[in-house]
Picture 1 (cartoon, rainbow, N blue to C red):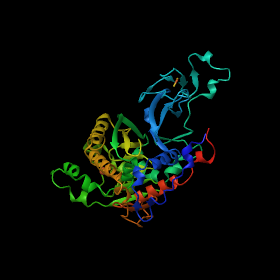
Picture 2: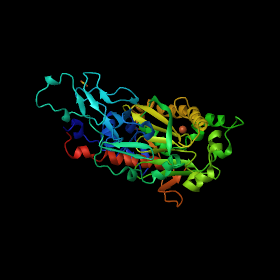
Picture 3: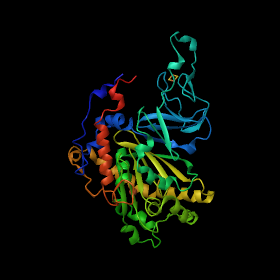
Picture 4: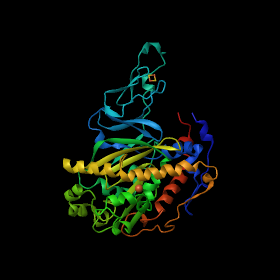
Length: 432
Ligand code: FES
Ligand code: FE
């Protein structure tokens, strides 16, 4: 079946001037664009699902979303992590309503159809009532066709023939490794998943994590003062810091200050860290740059803060709302007291109670709240900082710009525009 909305293509070329650094606010507010975004940006892209540490034995599961589509991520009997659309093939209820847990089957609470860990329909109450043509084999859960992981991060895509995940990440993997590859044992999740709702389009958050260091000194001024021992204005080395911004080819972005003495802010993590070993493993450029500070986005809606071990997804909930889901990662080799220090540091700074997170969310909601105004909506936004500054700098992989720059933001929206204007795989032949 071809959904009727596929007949209506909105050309977004006039809304995104990535070359000139202008953006139309309709990309945050328009309901039709939002529907097109779900089918052309979210459906074909690699989307973050979960961390491998959430699955230890067959039947462990975690429920999440890909765009607005609910999915179950679970480990099957062969210990492969698979993902299914969390919607019963009978009348469409979710077959799993828990956030996470362990099970043998997913049994729908509406009429009782039950599916095993391979997604097969294995039990149907009043089975004899169905015609002879009814085959349980035809009514299994819809499976996410491609699931792959990168150093503990599990991604999935509905695109049956995507570019491989590592190719999609490209140079972004080098920056991701600054958080994920401190030692051979990788990372684990501590605590649960924090979830909260914000007024604001998901792209406001995703683009900021990709590109926006400009807001830090202003928006987080009071928070920076709290981190200053004297409790007065932030230290000059914070206010005047310099750094780089990675501009990824597929809309990814990462910004980080560069400092030869770069180190973890949290005392216990700093004291425990073997910086010489990190330099040997990751190289000086990464230790002095993306390792201990900054933020980044893997297009479209996965972001992270290496210094906090915070990873998060900005789930779209209509054009005007997002749900933020955040995990805290630590190095597997960290002893319990250092893990706990890292967890608390992350909670104090980011997450629903974090002093920095509060500042950021307020800005996104502020921008969204007024963008529906008729006149306001027609006034474009400025993304011109660092225009034309992207280059291969010889130190960092891929193209980079200055720390304070909109370059990765322009890259983010250029990739968004390309996807929005390109028919996805499901538009090239009728879906069934
Ligand atoms: Fe699931 Fe009817 S909707 S059994
Ligand atoms: Fe911020």
